[in-house]
Image (cartoon, rainbow, N blue to C red; front, top):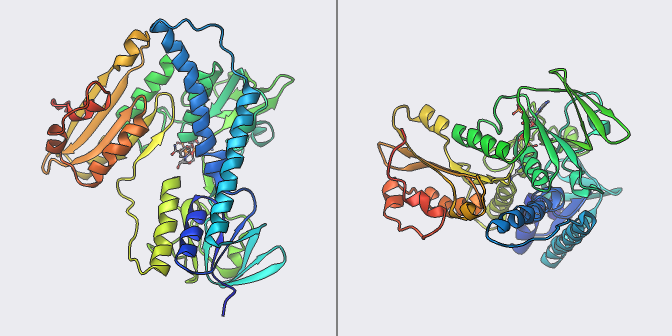
Length: 451
Ligand code: NDP
């Protein structure tokens, strides 16, 4: 009756996973993509960003190594070589994604897909009918309406393709993206100014101690933070940009990066043709089954207003097609989703912040904290410190939240995340023998309540 069983729009994390798994369940799947295989994460997000944290991390390692006796001569970074190598790797991954879809038997369409009725998608002048349509078009960069921002500023879509490493960089925004690039370029020797309208970095989804501690650590590393400050105007100059601030100051820089959030990408989807409902931020509204108000149309990932993280989109897409085509009744849980900010130092967390825990369980919260200089930093002559924090429910002894600021925080918290999801208590942490000497062992050796 229909040309295909499932038509997926968007070859990013959620769309590719859903298409591939659905095809594996034996249904006929088509997928449309207009920009790149792998979506934001592979092309202008997680993957190239992580490669950048590595290139920047070598600089710090070489500096620290000198404290251990290494004689490191002059060190230079061939920026063009790095960007070329990075592009080659991204192209390799694009190919892997495309092959993976083809090998799974997914019918691929290159172009802009528009929904014209609840069971029809139009692409490149062709109408394809589908029993179900899945929208997985992700998010797009949001730049505030500031004079000169769009014309003369750059975004995280551009920063991966800079021809030269900036000597001075202004970063607007102190969320994930802003702090990650601020850390990367600071490590690479760029003079970085961070402009933000709050008085604290990160947002309320992060523990208060984590926010303060990260700010201290990043300040020690030489970043210039400008809290409670707004950009009024960005002006182009011969050498770069001049940014005019609302405190009357101006800062000159080679580039200004707007890391001011992302919005759902519903461009040209034709949602108005079928009456798919969106919230006021433009995100597609879905029920717990990932279904929109039009029963044959589903949506997963950043185009919906849930948790904008790659692994969440993957999990949503996977669970959806398992339910639709493999008799599963599994839904993903939005509780206890671990995440990391690859700032310098890294931040990672799972569960409740102290503020959230206090609000949920007033006067029933115990806090354990460890703030220390990791062993590696001592001979390196580095003042970098690490913070680890546990939030425990005093009535049940359950660990409600686990937070870290420090080297490899994401790697460490990923392991502990399993324990938190399994409902580990503080007593479980206490009876776990530490692996010595590591930083991670601090999580199992905290004995004194800090409040
Ligand atoms: P965030 O929402 O994390 O941060 C946006 C920042 O921009 C905040 O500091 C915000 O300030 C500021 N901002 C927003 N609008 C304005 C404005 N009009 N004027 C001035 N400042 C403004 O967004 P990001 O862009 O950093 O990242 C987008 C999403 O991508 C993240 O939420 C995350 O889900 C995902 N991501 C995840 C990563 C990871 O897992 N490591 C890495 C990168 C992205 P205020 O708080 O005052 O509103």
